[in-house]
Length: 244
Image (cartoon, rainbow, N blue to C red):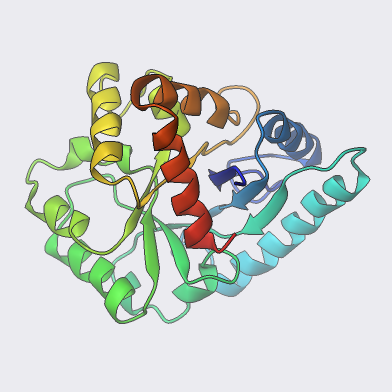
């Protein structure tokens, strides 16, 4: 089964991730070294900064540069599937252009949620994306939002929706800033146990220095705690979701 990095900022010069072709090349080779076969490229999309048309034009130009790197490589590098990390905004559930930001040819959208207490309006928008726009929502780096939820009612309601989630590999190996290391680790383990069929893993890589591709280390952490079966479940879920 193909190993997929579900969340990356590997396309050159489009966001705060890879800054140029050289960095993208290094990241692609590192992904290959770690056994990754398919990479989902998910540059940031902020509706208050750029139109969907403008974003897609920029992404297309960045993808051409990345594909040129792949063609010129002496060895086969991971394939790139385009998507976006779409930051939540009020009214997103009714925004007709949003489906154009889905991953590849799917109806799967990677959604970055607000880093604050979630509200009834947020819940309504996520419901609308699922029920009215008929999208499959994947909440990006789910472990980052938990500490902002002082009132857990909305969190619980959103988690009860038919959606998927993504966890960053680094949350299983690094000291994070969003939860204390012990709490973050336990949250991720518990969440994986509770949502084994709808959870996906991404490196959320941005560069080769402080946010490099790190699926290998994250998977080692999961295997040490939960065994190979947990990894197999993640891989199968991701392959099914993306039709790989």
